[in-house]
Image (cartoon, rainbow, N blue to C red):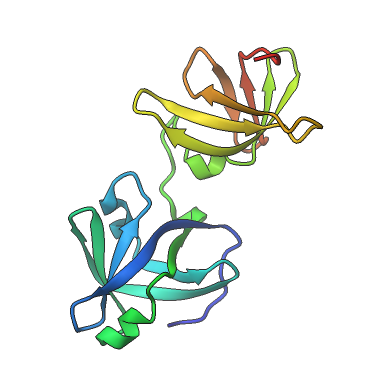
Length: 175
């Protein structure tokens, strides 16, 4: 494993679940919408929060809903087994730029949410998919620690300003 300075913002994209074969390959459970998403990155950060090491991906391929990968310097089953349970992360700055009106979920987490009247509703703590649309989990850290689920759809989401750290919504504070 190569050690080199790591960027501040890593996004966990999967987890190594098992060795794959006897020549050092690992099987990865991707957390991406499409399993192939992990194949776009020639280097991964492998480890756990606070302890990451850069791994060069020699080759990788989709294997059903998982990814099979050969990492440089991992040459046998025992070395691959030692990586079981490790997370696979990618620097956020390595992501391709999203299209107009598109956002990475990781960029939405932490943004302040206010309604059109300027009332603060909390911060985005998560995003999930329902099938019909994505949903923002917004938590207010006030005395009642209220959680709101806001649909990420045009009639509700009025403005997303990732750089400014804010989302403006058409949502009553009493909902």
